[in-house]
Picture 1 (tube, rainbow, N blue to C red):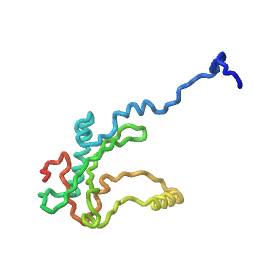
Picture 2 (picture 1 turned 45 degrees about the vertical axis):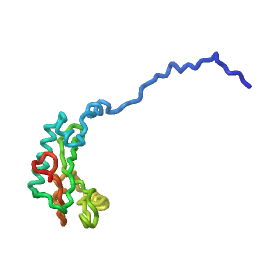
Picture 3 (picture 1 turned 90 degrees about the vertical axis):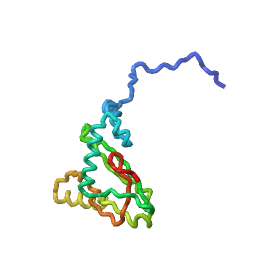
Picture 4 (picture 1 turned 60 degrees about the vertical axis):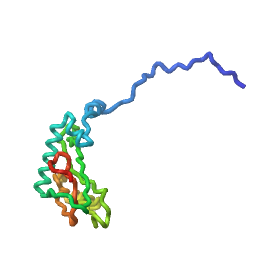
Length: 176
């Protein structure tokens, strides 16, 4: 058995410099930590960015009205009515600077029952294979590819069924 030596102390090599770990973009993260998108209508209206959120809501409501997506009606006795929710996002440019605030009104469709409330679902989103084919042809032909965002793209679809929703927060009308 070897005796335990207590007389030796472990001394770090003093020629080595102890450096803290590198933290990339910490200033950016700290500056933008408080600028996260609100999660509820109440948060948006009561936030310091309320002016921008209200403008985003107004733009979304204008687009919905232009597309004639709904008409106000009284609730019937046997009608299933689903709720709505505002979803807020903050769009940033490539430098992380705020470009604009965006508000989307979504119907809480998870409360619907397949076969009763609707027959099929469809989302107008490009298939990944279609995107790959498109990019491949563009590369072969030497075309330049640019990103483009279509505002209110999802409002261009057509529903075969009638869907009854409660008016969203911020829209005048009785929720009956």
